[in-house]
Length: 112
Image (cartoon, rainbow, N blue to C red; front, side, top):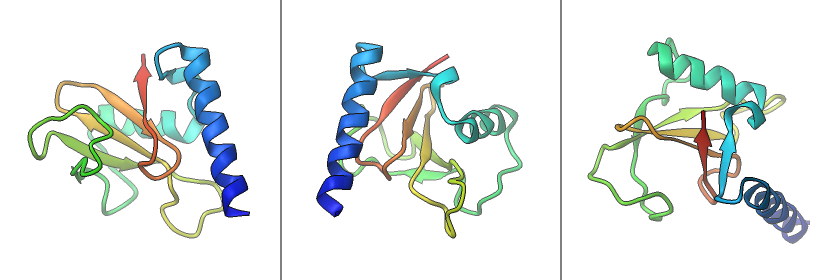
């Protein structure tokens, strides 16, 4: 079951990369909860989760390498999840945003 889920996530990611051509995703194509989170980031909050705005370490180096504390993470609520779920938006100091729907395994840069 886990292997099937991983395969489905990979296929969804590959389909998104092929559609965008560059691995990015348009804001309009994000889940509505992600668009809400982007609005909160732009407004500076208030954020619903205590961990929103904490430093994202990029330890796996899946995002461009930047100095420590360059990236911040924000929760994208997952309907039906009892916890924060797996979805996040990572915000860079220069204004770039990345979406992950699989808890940091894959990232797609958000196009405005």
